[in-house]
Amino acid sequence: MDEAKGIKAGYRVGDNTRRLVYSLVLIPIVPMLAAIGTVASVDFFGRRLIDNIGWSNFFSALMWVAAIIAIWRKVIVWTLGRKWLTAIVSFIPFVQIVYGQALWNSGCVDQELRLSQFQVGVGVWIWVSVWVWWIWERRHMKKVSDSGQISNRRLPENVVRVVASIGILPAMFGIFFISFFAFDELFGISESRAFVCVYTLVATLTVLIWLRIWWGAVAWSQRVLWKTVLWAMALMVVPSLGILISGKWHSFLDTIFYFIPVIGWGIWMAGTVRYWPMKIASGVNGMTPKCLQCGYLLTGLRGTRCPECGDEPTLDELWAATAGEGL
Image 1 (cartoon, rainbow, N blue to C red):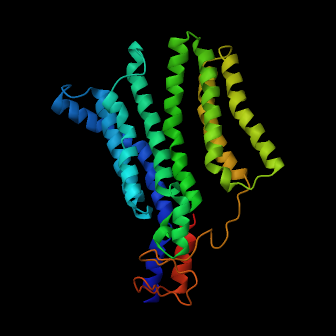
Image 2: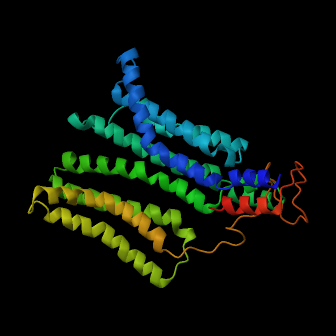
């Protein structure tokens, strides 16, 4: 029996980790499924409804919204206001399907512009959804948690930060290509210089958004702040200099320089999280004990039996589940 209970507790540990992995898996899976759905829809409906890009954006938006909500629905406190706000903000990825046009008449790159606009919409939707699900009504939910209600189901802050970080990927790629086409076509700047301008712009946005997401998790000191500033300047300046001096070597090296900026975003994200000194959360990974069945707050009780649903886990099960939820 004890072994069976241990297995039960083991399945509970790492639920948030699995949800994060499921969310990351959507990044490669959604475009592929959208492409398959587009081919099938065009074969069946033809172009009577929308064109290929419209179909692709439609299926991608549908899958992003449905999948993300399905993955995280059990750790969202579904108040009436939160349900309405979720319904409203979930329209954001569909704006490009309803509007269906590029930001300007760009001729041969209209399709790329529309895809880029859609990617920005997906990133914005993720950020707004995170705010709606786990930040909106935070003060109210804190008051509710003091009375021992299920607001404790709100995710640990670092899990929320990772979910918000996922939005950077589509948004920054979308902004990158939109800005590049704008510099190249609207302002007539040469390709290499446009690339430098756009990369510097997007790198700056990436740094600012990343800092905004993770600022509260870092134990800031003057030394850490200066190292972060220097690291950010290197991210924004070094690849740009490489692009400016490219064209003087073998074409293979020139190509590499055009990939360095994108690699730089990943190095920035991994490096900062690796070397930033993170704050030490109180309690077990910043979490408080709660019922494994209904989420009722168990703080202050003399035993593990839940007064709400009657479930009574062992101390080992409760400890393992609480530690696992504090990813």
